[in-house]
Image (cartoon, rainbow, N blue to C red; front, side, top):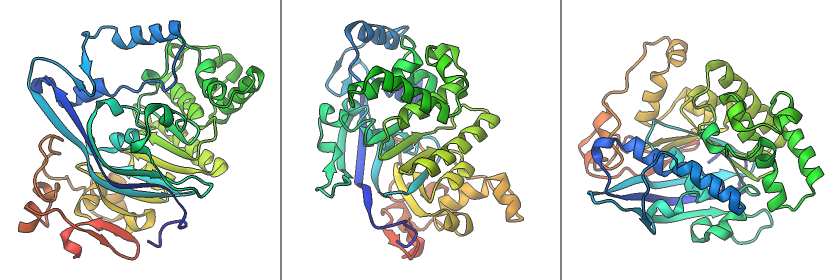
Length: 387
């Protein structure tokens, strides 16, 4: 498609499907709470014995002890299968940035963490491919075929990751400086003085005040915005080829959101690289990204350039997202439009096109058949309207 920056693909996702299988899930407790509990981001490194015990104490504090067998948590209740990503395809080119947008529960976070295999043990079933193309021109690597040790060699060095919950993602028992420089010690075997100077440098790049002072602090002494900056510096410190950012603006006030947007924008310009941003903030996505990918029901329903998305989105869901934004409605001299209906639960998606119960253009075949992917000159859209 002509809106791509070049033809050099660095990451390609082919028809990816990811399912959670929860045994003993109490439906009355709420799906979001259970998923958040299962998918807490944990450090990918293997900590030393005392640190490992501290981490385990932290994650188990105040929680009921559970036993798990392989990929399932086991209770004496009913079983629930959740389709979190259902047939997603996406390509990322070198030097390109993709803004991944959609409502809560559409699969954005699962897609990013599936690339990293951060919670592979909790996925009961995976199909498709996630292909990484090394810069040396060797054959692509299917990330789903790698074990945790092999995948761990890519985390941090090839894939940088900014988690959605920065304060919860940082280890409260380790200093900011130690956590920020650990990958340089464990993967690159740099000397301690070199590591310290590089941590100072990157904490300065993300505009964290007094890097040398904050180097010795713990996460509890940082504000949410400062913790987010620390996570951004950790994601970038080893110069990864691909940056994956999961809701980097979540839980930030408007002032800090503007600061982080400016920060990521400047770092993207200065450091280059390829980026995927998952965000609810469509305004931020259109500023930070070259390409917009709209997700609904675990699928990417439209991919197009930012200019095309703002001027003439094709998918009815894309149109609804934009028409619900005050600044977009004002720019178009129109009124705000509410997206009809509610997002179905991931374990109860409708047949056919998953947006059909909420779509103003719904046809009979939309309720029984999955829409084809239609390629135009500058857009890929999954909708029967464009057959």
